[in-house]
Length: 228
Image (cartoon, rainbow, N blue to C red; front, side, top):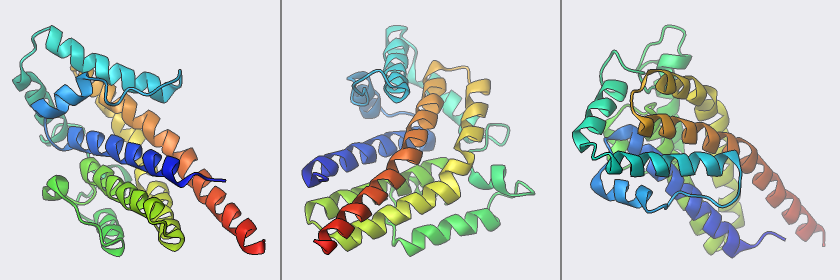
């Protein structure tokens, strides 16, 4: 039987990881975020590739401080990678639109997902809807809603929320995250952003397996309950 309190904590943890990654793609790391990562807030237990990637990001932030690297270096690298036209272009439409047209059909499709979910976006909303930071923030939003549905509990709402998560991952994030992250790894000069890209890949690949498995597990449990 699926434990509601346990899954509430899992949803909160996933929301936190999405929030951190969203922030790192959207703006240069703040002092508070840097301190949180350095303290090991993202380090996961076990010897999985996801856990290793989280530890690598923590180590990269700690090394940057130990080397007395000024914050303006990371700010400049963030701008070069994610803001300047000559950078990696962190927009889904650049990678999936046949004409690489940012703001076109793909962007509209992403915006429609947000509207259908009645998403309330925050800091990243200044970017186009298909910016990596905004898409990750949308997943954070859905995980926070999921957390509440586990708490209430609300089986129907939970199922709809997980369907949104699975649909958005399948139709959007999982179709282009590797393409972006491979460019970041190839082009960045900063270990921090190399580690951000690696964690993004490992986390989203874990989500690829986790979300549909959880969805099917819930459906199976409810079918058994109804039959009983």
